[in-house]
Length: 619
Image 1 (cartoon, rainbow, N blue to C red):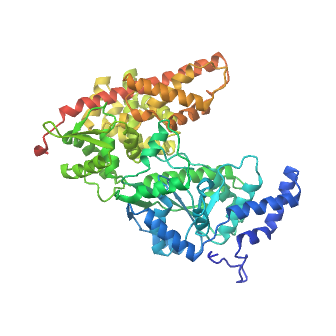
Image 2: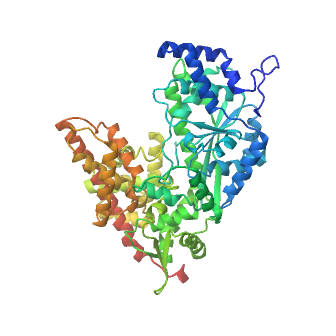
Image 3: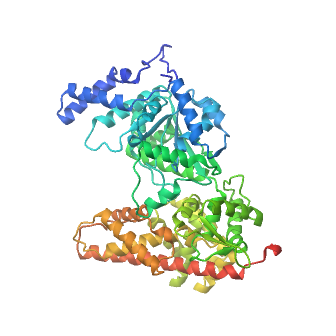
């Protein structure tokens, strides 16, 4: 066991090095067993036996030989990528890790994520992290090597089992007292759409409970947000298949071999960025200022959403993200190089003006740089090139829209407020609102609420300030009135940045399908979520064939599930009567209105492509 040494006040080691023995011998363990016996009616002996089994299953070691073997395997599995890590600040983190536990919380795009992160940390003096992963990945013999290298395989569900969560809290408390570093992927699984998923709170609750149980004298815990982005991913094809309704291939040794073989070809860079660490002590202290004690049910979501914001803010923008941003949602139209530049150029200008993080290879404002990015996507089969006419044209390849959207969605959070402003302006102009400020704010808040299960929004004050800056860019004198709908679309076109149909259009179209099918159901009947999603996928495909759906990436289980969460939040899943029927109809009408507004923006954007098209020699 190679944990960092904690010391007691008298200068002696405070706990045994064997986690299981230390936990079983602790007074806290005895108190937990006594409480479980009272709550469950089971005997203490039975509970102790069960608890010992749980600890034996979850506890991991960090041994030098196993770690070296794991690192060698990791370098081989990540051979597809050159790791591009921004290591600024890692030296300070390494110093802090001598006195504090660091909890690395990366976004989750690939099974390779932990291996990529390890390649950046290991050379800079970091002890191997204790990495939490689903027990579905514990396949012998790799599972044994993993456990000896710090992998903690945890159960996916602990429903009706109070012993396992209790032991997990005690194990976390032990690791924090040892100043061990932790790592897990708090989305609960790899993203299916490319954007950051809503966090799962369970493991974070274990951490907060353990931190609070260790008392006020416990050393601080620093949560380190980590953004990982890949130029290209072999996994995206399978993820996209699952997202559009296909069945997931279960993990197995045969699957591991197939996955390893898929990493044989160079796929560009894996970009690694670290956000500013968040002090758990500071969040707990803020909670105590508002109440007599820190309530974990308040602390956990505050920590989760702050970490999510910091991951998003650290996520670098890649050439693949920008190119797919420009080629998607053009109603199936292929674009010339000049037309693609027309879409991307103002976007890159906006990114640079705002100081957003870019990878070093973003050079898309010139034809040569854009051509290189396009060739990469053509080689991967995501983009199709036709060069048999007067000049080459480019489009997303048939049936590859979900994969293209995966890359685009890594950066859509940077443009969500702009997209909301565009739709809110169209909606306010359609109404002929007299009080423009109130109308814009009302429609913006409504869109924020519609999309709250898809994007991480700041506080209303910060949201308002951001919207104000975006509105001024569209129409500097907007407070004097928006004018007619034609005036608004002309102002949007002149701003050269029209993105609502690319950023939020696919989500709203998917939501509209779900809302329509929900409104058609009898309100007294219970809603079978899986059956409803399956039906909605079929209806969305039909609408796509009928050209009533603009974005193929709207045919998405993950996005449609987000709509069901929203419907549940609004009390629309029932059962109920006539009032529920009306509320469901209103929900469907609300989504139909915003989808129609997005269509106005789409027409404006596509209509302006030809008008602003310039030959490359004039650029």
